[in-house]
Image 1: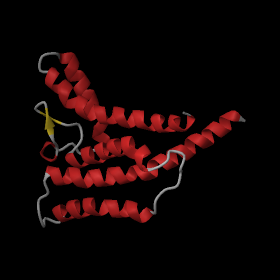
Image 2: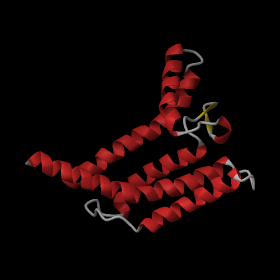
Image 3: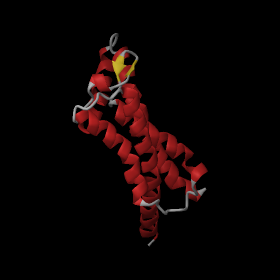
Image 4: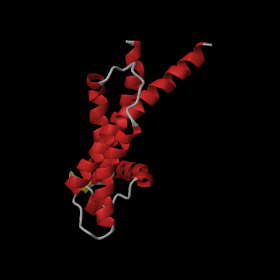
Length: 162
């Protein structure tokens, strides 16, 4: 059971973070009838503002309002959540090795191509593609974050034992 503790310490904030992405538009919808919900919605949108441009045209809409992050960021975070949940099926939790950095770089290539070609005016991307490219990166990122997190928790536990 001890080997699952760092995993759940990692999983719970990822789950909470992803839940907040949906809470913002939900509370905005409820805010149409209650100003208390509107304050919650504005607060949650504000939390995500420093990490995402939040352009409505690049976001999915839920409950009639844009999600608190764009489609690509939604893909990254949902990819992180789903692969965090599936992680124990793919790798032992006490295996703190990380894959080659080239896999992480490869997972960024679809995002770079999509975003780069749009930035250069070669084409216009669309939200479903933004989501998929973000999901690929977010899913791959987990195989680097969880082992590093496990190592940090292990070091902290050893320090606390002394």
